[in-house]
Image 1 (cartoon, one colour):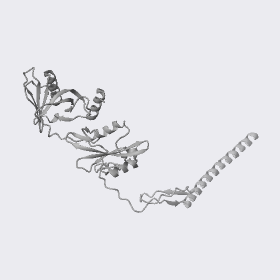
Image 2: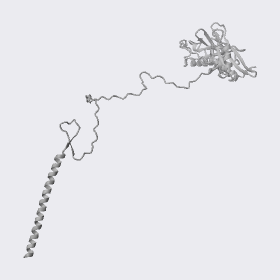
Image 3: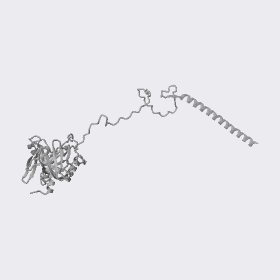
Image 4: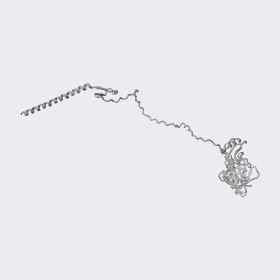
Length: 352
């Protein structure tokens, strides 16, 4: 039963994972072949995929146009003649033939646009810069592990939450194998598929072999075929929960900065006595009849001397009292004299 063209187109897009630029029927012949063979061709990316007919979903041959050195157009001025291109690749020459000249011109324009990013002049060879020296780093899937079949099955069985597909090296050189764990109604089932590496890509060895461009495409093919129920195995890695302080570089110090020293004037220090001076005693209340005289001759001596003047003071007081007493006696004598004289005058007056 023939598949619908949309289904075939979708399968081709899934297998190649490249955008479609142009497609149509053409004839192809290698330099060692005698006759042209008819193919249905699709220009996807920088590759030309050849199919036996429109209904085939897996390509029969693939021409890598990135390795194209030049493209020559045979009989460019014969408008009615079929258009024939000669593609000089890295290791071979391939001729493409189109019965319709207009179709041939369209093929030529798309190929030059994709590879050389410009349209060339009709009838002239167009050398393509070699890209052999461009290093390509193939993308390696994370689930490609260096394990055996038994180890892969044990990993999938022990940790189904990590994934259901593991790519591993095959026992054959330069080939691979895919181990998957698929859930069925009866329980989980382990399956192993062989993936052969070829010059045009990787071939999945099924009842109808499927060729893809990379190992990632192998995983994508199985994922889509199982309606995204399978996914690549990704082991979980522990995460840290504590941040450690790294040692500071030599030029950076985390200690508190030392205070900046301010230069001070050079002054000779004052020499002080090592013996601690005793504090002066609190002044006592002055005693009556005591006088304190400063000792001017010994300024450094803080002791006070008391001088007693009891005898002299008493003599002075006695002398003063004697003077006062004598003055009082003279005054009293004068008063008594006055009184006597007044009495006598009064007596004389009464007599007269």
